Image 1 (spheres, helix red, strand yellow):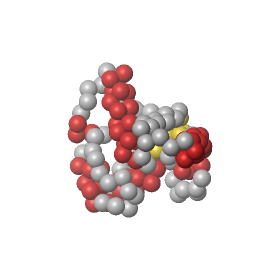
Image 2 (cartoon, rainbow, N blue to C red):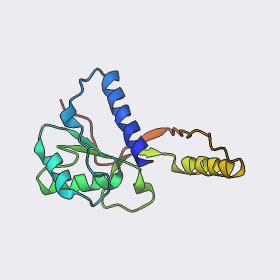
Image 3 (cartoon, rainbow, N blue to C red):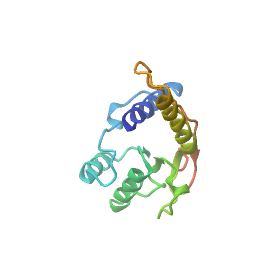
Image 4 (cartoon, rainbow, N blue to C red):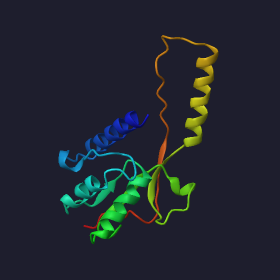
Length: 151
């Protein structure tokens, strides 16, 4: 679900900070509606409250595209000033106006596994069956909205 995905993605962020011995700054993690088109004022407030960040990692590609629009409208250049990375890799299925850097997962593998689990539960109902966690490999698809940090 989106909620467990959000929790897992945040846990991955915490783990990456720990792996690279970067201190956690709670001001850099903001929670807001993950629905594209919702609460644009809140998203704008978060993106414009500070100027010292160098990257935005959005929950989805659609939210990343909204972030790019907000940043560009307010004089921040992507990726020169701020790198923006989405999550979904919808570019592979749709023509987007921006060549968005995105984290891609094997959606077809997830769908296949989900259908297998559903069929299994229908054929052999077990009220005590526990939820199954499906973990998919992810890969960074580099396009034009992210670049290495300048020193």
